[in-house]
Length: 362
Image (cartoon, rainbow, N blue to C red):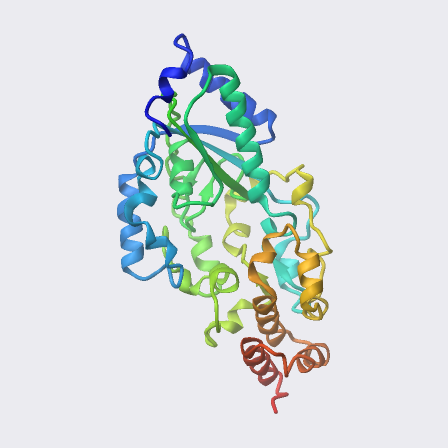
């Protein structure tokens, strides 16, 4: 942001009225809620530094790469006075309960946000349109849009903007909408009035802590990513710790357990957004079907999807683990045997482990 952009803004701008209009425009663009917060995040900065010191980030080295800038928005984008935070519900309607999919070890469980198109482009386009609508109203102003695309503490920002509180599972919870939503931010130099930060409403509940298959939620508001199934199946490169593989079950991309048991998600609203509807039959797919995809098929069927970020090798790695946890050896063993000599050492290692689980090793 340039230092003189504020002078270009209409001199008679009513910022209270503008804040109300921004929220209305955001809803018109399809966001489910819009809030406005201030940039300083001192308590979250201290929490981040403790988290990094304990090594809970695992191999996500980028979490510490920018120092404290992640918790200081006005250093990341000089001139930032306010942050417009938005949320968008993503849970598709009419899905089977997570427990039904997880209870059938022949099927693949994919985190619900990843069943449709990747949300990043959708959110960025809408944030850009919101910025253009503001500009049409007040004149030129400084802004930058982010959707999980920069060193930003988006959950802390969402809390300060009144969109929810940080739950014990470290996700943002909303009293009217649960937690099945994605976040985006518009850093701006507009001196807008701010919303009130939301205080926690988890009480004594520890359902998310108790349900975590690997014990990754090591305490309230503390996540050791090195044990988290979402981290292991999405962020982690290389071999998955053998001790953790049995707990992954049939989860091949992410894990929603700590959300599905959260009492606040009884208020979760299904999304009407077509881009979030399941594609390629991913909500009903079997492990053997997905394991049979060659790289060309994988690339074609994950185009525009968050699943593409894995790459074919880690896709196969994850499914091999899930097949190793399957209860039907008659189906799992032939599928695994077909990839016993896969070109990838990573895939071969996990296939061999899976075959040993079924008593079918060399």
